[in-house]
Length: 133
Image 1 (cartoon, rainbow, N blue to C red):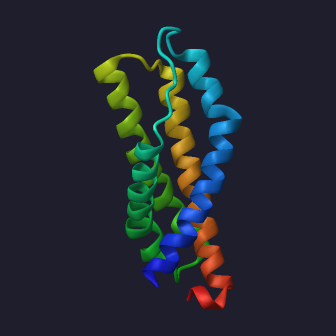
Image 2: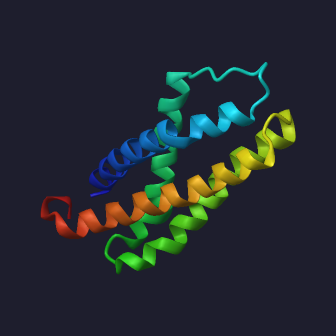
């Protein structure tokens, strides 16, 4: 069951995060990062991040609420997104001082929305698709 939850969550994460990155994340970063700092995408690091992040989301949020009403997953998902994305954004701001508050706030909000959408969609899908149970 855990593998099915993981694959379903990863599927939604890849779709929704890709859309978000292409729609507004790159634009916010490009607009707010110093011009001397270039966005350089590292695919291996991205893959490792996605695999670990989704594992945490499944373990701490999706799996515990997979058989609960869909609304019960919202608060834990928001909190997971807040904790993980704030850790990243605030650490980059504190250590490298290249993020401004617009990037920090937009990143954290995106993490909260992203985790909530993914978690709700996964729990909903698992409740409606019998082979995922």
